[in-house]
Length: 468
Image: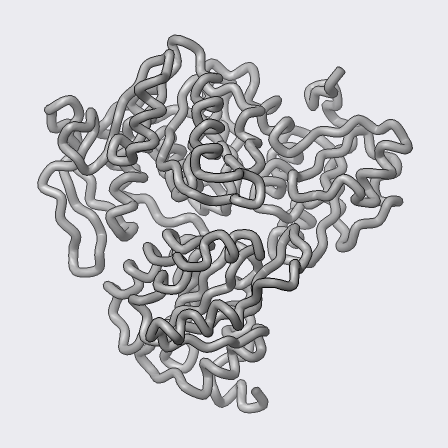
């Protein structure tokens, strides 16, 4: 019989991989609910420090002794089955849960639970939905995969009626959830180390949709043919959103300001119900905002109050986040880690005031680079110069048949001004020797590439970084 987190109230929960974007948020949620939390991760990081400040006992490195004395162990899908802590928990008969199982259990018992899924935009749309609901006077409990200043972190403990969470498709983990409302942003080829192909991904999204009750609602991107197909087969209520006027929710009089911020009327079933003038960028933000607003209204929010909250929305950390200025160069970071997301981020960057645009890409996982190799070649075409660090392995071992130098060669053969700068020190040195005041440097990836921004800013302007 599977353990349930409610049976361990006030007891010690040990979390393997606690520094991950979702796991750290769950750790915060457990701490706020009175659990004793310990955990481990491979590397130090700002999330580790934040959790320590909140009372979690976190150490770096995986040590079997770390689980001793724990009442229950939670681990991420990225943790190998032979992980020494997981193996020790089994030896000691300590009950275990996956990250997705824990999230699913925490969502239980709420009158309405919302799962936001899709290959791109989950965190931003979930945060937009949370802000819209709060602005409309509702009181959601929230779990995000990123830090959102409007709720003071990646989690918010609200009432028992409403829970909003990202529903991640990695290793089909969102099948552990039981939402009453699902927002489906897009269905695209990703996580191909787990899925055999796009059809397998489609099948899994349809399994997720089938989890909704008959009186539940799927709010889907009607401009995405795979999402529209999913909705056509759904046994529950559906509502579509998108740029096309055939969608139930669509923009009217859409235009972008000089920096790429969308302004439009919100049209629902032919009726103008609100106006949005977003502070975030790009046409993809139109989709995110429409999906969030449609979900908020479906739950019961007043559309005008929800729209007013969205007009004040500021991005989640690591989503086109301006981190500072060094040597007159604007440093920006974005979490985008596949070609579609990188192309979107650079499209936004190209509209911002700048002299020359530097793209710094940290490819994420060998399997993703292999499967999407050709898509990576031109995903940085909006940049003047492209730097590619070594691949961030994450959970994978180096297969020996793919590396960043191969990607850079293919980019250069295609006419892209690309350079392989393997380490953060190599990348910083390359940039500092060539950038000019007024330039913009955008780092991209979901690994630890954000630490490059922190490193450059810590070294300061050229006078303080002469030793590099």
